[in-house]
Length: 106
Image (cartoon, rainbow, N blue to C red):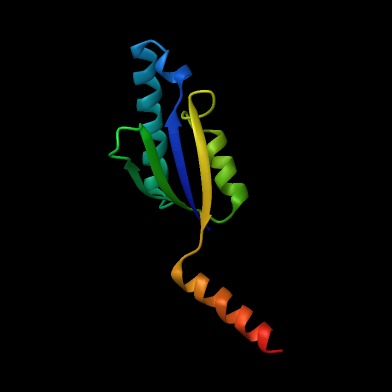
């Protein structure tokens, strides 16, 4: 399953001492490197609009696996807000439409 995770650092994060912010960012980089190497984290982007948001594309076996991974993230509440969006690839979308079309013909 593919998920997009969008995070944004909160005021609780920006209120931390600079050294603690650096510690969290470095831990997050190491955390993400592990999953890049495993092929589960596919892409990571920082929005170029100055919002401080980061978008990551994850490919994991299930929602449960995604949740388990992210409960261990250094970028967790209260330091970030998180939006998670499950997405379907083109072929899966085509399969869903084909199945719906077939069911509608019955």
